[in-house]
Length: 246
Ligand code: IPE
Ligand code: IPE
Ligand code: MG
Image (cartoon, rainbow, N blue to C red; front, side, top):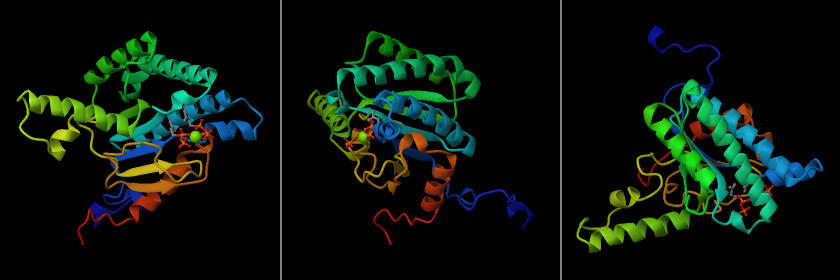
């Protein structure tokens, strides 16, 4: 009774166990958001970076364990150099600021993806965020950067096969395979959100999304806010996850 009474302001999906532990978001629609306003695409990416800051803080305050966002795919190198450079600069800027505030904000950060082709500056910033994050506990934001689901699987398969051929691993199984992914140690996402009206994964978390719930909305990422996330969480709370069972 009193033990189970909920505050009036609590949203239905916050009651019980219906808040996902891990939400993943494909941050899409920055370019169209800018175009609608007659702005350069890069202005959309800046606005999108702001939305990420806001949503990460909100997820942490709701009590989630992980937020994973898709920031730059292995295919996004196909874009004009100026746009790629602008995105990389925004990421640098974000990491510089995050490093200063991580301890205060209590947000751990992890970059998932192939960091090899990134600039030395970005690589150094990633090393720094890794070492600070190791000292912290609690909420973790994962930023997928130069990430591709197929690339991740191929790289994992290559490493795992080498271990087996050198006699350091016995056989290839699902649990072992997951340990070679960038996401090693991170539970699979419960809910994957894609704004901007596109209904596809675009190579995001192919392995990890096997039993994720999906939520699509037409809202463009820079317009996405706490109320939009609430809608997705409310929808998620109504899903019945069966994992192949009954
Ligand atoms: C997502 O927004 C950001 C990245 C892919 C880096 P887009 O830049 O893809 O925006 P749209 O899809 O063109 O509107
Ligand atoms: C997916 O968006 C990648 C990111 C949001 C980082 P894209 O805009 O690259 O995907 P497509 O090209 O529409 O499939
Ligand atoms: Mg896009």
